[in-house]
Length: 428
Image (cartoon, rainbow, N blue to C red; front, side, top):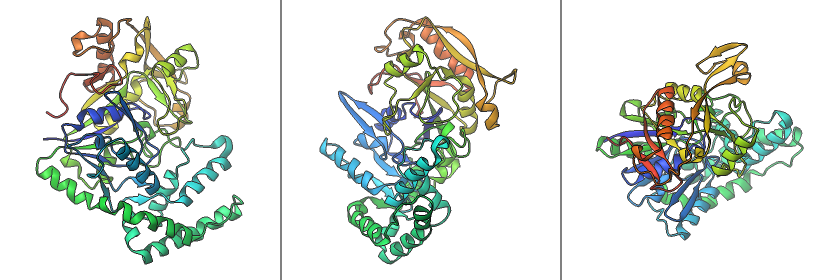
């Protein structure tokens, strides 16, 4: 049985939550391997809609063990709030596992995040202000606070004091903000210790043993490929690695144990926050995609920027992730257009470019080269097989598959759990 990575193949918000939930009933573990509560997944189960931010989508599947891996940064207040909200709705959250090596987001991380963005003004990155970047920075600078530190008060005090020695200088002298008291932070963090202790585990050992025993493990990425700190549209990226390699470093499971890598691909393109976006629309078509697709960030509440499908980005995602399959989502949103433009290449300084340019400046100036595909007007939300789709919708899917470089194994035709056409099984 396979170990799978499931990740966003664009700028995030592709519908990973639905894809993970769809597989959740067939897998034993669903693992978040990077990011934090800056991610957001919407999952519709029957007439119930769930907005998940930090928790793996598999928490909604009764037979599945949800895992927060060591590569995730965890705001304990958000974690407990999200667990409480699900418990109130009758969801059993007792099987959750939390890596003791995951780093904690503290109040001083969110403070630094927000004041830095304000200070940058027009140059701001467009962060969610939830402390993700500063927490990862502390991790790399080796002054981070890990989950396991909650259970050694002396170590916790030393680490918080060390982190604040420098940050308080910056807050006071650069941002004119009041210094943060270390004792107050320590007390707040210790207040979470007993509440999250039942979930804390050696998740690396558990996951490797599970795979060796033939269990099915699904690694769930947050954000998307083009937001990867190494492989995305830097500097307008997140602070971690949503690409497939992040699944290994973020969980402690080696690459030879992963069988498939599935990219979630929206039938058009969206992104939240600042940064270049070649196919972005500023007209009635862009507004229609936003309205019909319900394109508003699950975590941020911000309207998403919308544009036509970009095959250059899809090919890039296939390459840097080693994708074996695509899950195409929100095909139903495109119903009603007579013709649908698809970006097949870019024009940069008068030259046609078919692969994503490595140069930040070139990508910023890239102009989309479109190919027009015939649209359809029929309602596809009740389609159960590929042949149920209108001929033009079938042709659109086949064209995207050929342009993107990996087979499309499932198609979302509506928001519901059952509104999916499965072409090839991800678990074979």
